[in-house]
Image 1: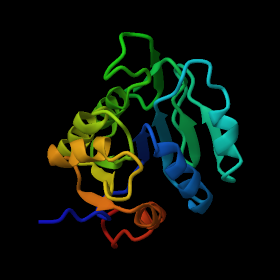
Image 2: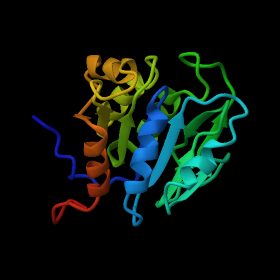
Image 3: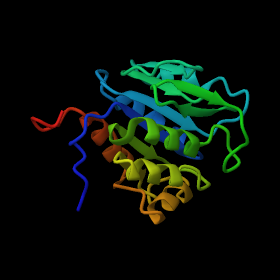
Length: 200
């Protein structure tokens, strides 16, 4: 039975990606509605010292874009970016924590670290998206989002620049939806705007 995606009022959208994922974000962000009533967290594999990502993404949207900071409260309508060389953890009190522990899947920030802690903090109020990428990071975390009652979306591997990451999530049965970039944009703009009466 297909999950009813509009039963929940989502509070957080978390998007992970690696090789090829940035190109998708550059297409998605300009088309996101500007009255979002959920927060957005972006966890992209980045090189240390990469300080250009925030500015690059800020130019693509009228929404506020900033790097996440230690102990910062997560606010709706803001796009937060995981800083380079730190795992971005989401705490149960809906704040961020930056972690410098070992790399996961050769990556820091690791998508799994953010997905898994977000699933614990937000449960069914969380939507997760996994984009193009070259390793398995994010697949297990996406499964945990699904098991916690959240909505899970995977970029169609046939469209992804590098299909390995989304394919790993599909093989784990972690995806509620397998969508093209255009379909992802449409769904994200519908979140919380097609909720049936009595389901808020």
